Amino acid sequence: MKKIALFADVQNIYYTTRQAYGRQFNYRELWRRVAAQGIIASATAYAIQRHDDKQIKFQDVLKHLGFEVKLKPYIQRSDGSSKGDWDVGIAIDVMEAAQHVDTVILLSGDGDFDLLLDRVKSKYGVKTEAYGVPSLTANSLIAATDIYHPIESDLLI
Image (tube, rainbow, N blue to C red; front, side):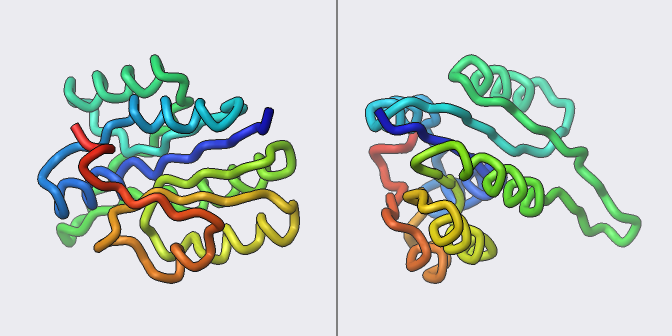
């Protein structure tokens, strides 16, 4: 049975599904689909910590499903801009996990991850998959992955 590492860029998926569909992503359905492919050796969800009840409940759901939830503080700058980005953390964790699994699955449409997927395929020989909203997923990410899964209504709540 193949071993799978699953990585969810929560902010990316939240905003892209909301923008494209006005709906939320169904993490339970994702888990069911991925578990049907093999053993989920690790699953990590990367989110921004905001300390509101709705976010805490959502993070509890992710933990209940089997995700390790990693949180970064939400940073509001004095100029009004904000920062809350997990790209480097995701990249480090994917590189480490790729040494121990057969498949890496990334839940994100962010084109910054195209080089990461190319690298883990060439260096570790893992199969890569990505889930993203078709109209908001970078073409470079789609091209870099072995299998691209478009997020459509069957993966939404």
